[in-house]
Image 1 (tube, rainbow, N blue to C red):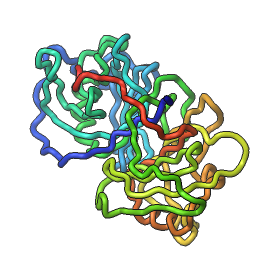
Image 2 (image 1 turned 180 degrees about the vertical axis):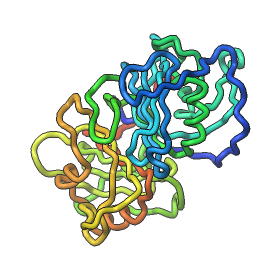
Image 3 (image 1 turned 90 degrees about the vertical axis):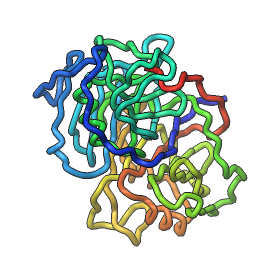
Length: 334
């Protein structure tokens, strides 16, 4: 069995925001700092939403650094000290989607413990919320934030937003933070599994008419998979050229276009992407660099281009998509 990219793509209807409640005594209130860089003390955070006033939000969490970076349309707008899972309750690395948001939530497992400004990342145990910040990993798997920061982040994000959790330090890649490795165990079972012939594709967008799209390219499968709201809506056979592996990468579509043809659909305009890469395995790479090595049916390329909207995520991996039982996390542990 192989380790896979953790994809949680289901969405629920948005919940209305209520007035922020006071933080419980067991939660760190937070201390703002004017520093956009440098080490943060426990409870410190930096917030500058005016730096980018619109566009998709991407949250990057570094477990080794115990820090969260928040980007809007590729621009850093916030960072905070966090506390992730303690030994025996390690926070999983991977690429996640915000599945559910609840401003006032209580743990179903740990004595009804409060979890203010909860943003769920998995259905079996991992969420972002405010909590105690001792300066080291101390949670049961969740990502704890300063209370004040959790209020601000809650208002900024939307369901379907991308969260990347990294479990090793690496240098800061282009328009990104320190995400480290992007792999985690999962039970990821593609519905369309019959092998595709060269230059063929499946495309069934009516299976999930709206919502954020995630594209997963597996160089081992030689297949590009398309998911919307966690439902497979398409796939295409992929021809991969050039020496070496593609590596493990994540790209998020931003607002805006360039005045030149797209590398993916030449009769469309080039789009802007935020790149998160595993720099520990090599130099930073752009999505257009990878595209030069990958070819799929041109008709499929155009259909996919037209379906993508800002906030869409493209994940590249050299691993095959095979079935594997996921780790057993307790439901929304604190």
